[in-house]
Length: 605
Image (cartoon, rainbow, N blue to C red; front, side):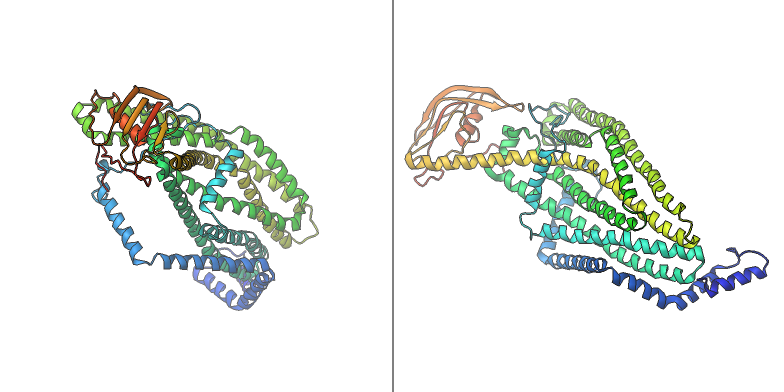
C-alpha cells in the first residue's frame, strides 16, 4: 500500500545516502505532498467513509434525530424570545437592578441586595448569631428518602410526559447518544486508519483518516454545542419550575409568615433555600443528567466494540475487579453530602448577618453597636472558614481514593488488552498494531467511562445535600397548605351552624372573620398568649385575659414594651393561635371580613 509519493521520497533519500528525515521534506514540499495525496485518493476516502457510515443505521438515525432536536429547540427559543415586550421588560429590570446595586460605579461596598440565608435542622431547632441559622443537617444519605424527595422535585418540573422539561430531556438524550456514537465508533475507525497509514506509510489510508476525522470534527462541533445549549436550558427550566412552585406554596396559607415569624418547620431564612439552593440544585441536577448518561452509554458501546477482538470474558473480569476496588475505596472516603449541607448552612448564616446589619443599620449607628456587630460578622466568617478548611482536609481522602481507583484501572486494563495481541504472532506487524491501537483506545475509553459511572456517587452526594434542604422546604410548606385546607373545610361546616367563629386555644391559627354576624362584638375569654420561640415552644406574654368590645365602643390597651399588646392583636387577626381560651370576632352575613387592620410599618409596592 505504499504510495508513489512515499516511494519518490524514499528514492530521494536514498540518493542522498541515508534515510528520509524531516529535513528532507520542507514545509511547502510537505503541503504539496499532502495536496497530491488528497487529489489522488479523495474519491477513495469519501467512498470508504460514506460506506462505513451507511452501514451504521443507528449512527445515521441518531445523527438525524439530534440535529433535528437541536435546530428545533434553538428555533423555538429564538421565536419565543423575539417578543418585544418580554425583552423590554427584561432590559428594564436589568437597568433597575444595576441602579439599585450601583454596579455601574463598581461600588460593591454599597450593595443593598443581600440574600438572607440559612438552613433547617431536624430535631430541635436553634441558631447562634453569626454561626448560621441552621446547624448540622442530618438525613442526607442516599437512600429511600433521597429518591422520594428527588422524585417529588422532578414531578414538579415535569408534570406530564409532553411538557417542555420532558422535551428538553429527550433532546439532550438524543444528543448524548450521538456524542457517544461519535466517540466510540467514529474514533475506532479513525484510530485504525491513522495507525495503518503510519505503520505502512500509506497515503491512501492517511486520506481515509483525513476525511473520517473531518466528518467526525464537524459532527462533534454540532453535537457538543447542542449538548451545552440543552444543559443550560434544562437548568433554567428546572430552576424556573421549582422556584414558581416554591413561590406558590410560600405565599399560600401565610406560609411566609409561618416560617419567618412562627418558625414552623424550623426553616430559618427560607429565602436562601428558594433563591440559592434551588439554583444550586438545578445546576447539579442538569450536570448530573448529562454527565451520567454519557459514561453509561460510552461504556456499553465501547465494550461491545472491544469484545469483537477480546471477547467478553476479559473486559467483564477487569470491570468486576475495578468495581470491587472502587467500592472498597469509596467506603474510605468522606460523605460530600454532609459537607455540602454544613457549608450551605454556615454560608447562609454568614450572609444573614450582613442582611441583618443592613436592616438595622440606623439603630446600630444611633446606639453605637458597630464594635459588637463586627464581632458577630467575624464570628460568622470564622465558623464558615474553619469548616471549609476542615472539609478541604477531608476532601484529600476523597481525591486520593478517586485517583487510585482511576489509575489502577488503567494499569490493570492495559494488561488485559496487551496479552491477546502479544500472542498473536501470525498477523502482520501493520495489521497487529492497527488492531491493537483501535482496541486499546476503545478499552481506555471503556475503562474511563466505567470509572466515571462508579464515581457518580460523588455527584449524588452533593445533590443529596441540596435535595434534602429543598425537600424539607416543600414538606413544611405543603403541610401548611394542607392544614389550611382542613381549617377552611371545618370553618365552612361551622359557618352553617353558628353565627361566629370560635378559635379554640391551641387549636390552630385560622384567620379571623368566618361566620359571625354583623353587630357581634369582639370578645376574649380566658385567653393566654405566648410568643413563638426559634427552638420551639412559646414565651408567655399574657395570661387569662377576658374582655369584650361591643360595636361602637372603644378600648385602649396600655403596657410596657414586650408586654403583649401587639400580640393580642395578632391573635385577634388570626396570625397567632391562643395557647388557651376562646376568641370571638365579627363577620358579615356572607362570611366576609368587617375588620380593617393597619400594620405598624408601611407596606409599599
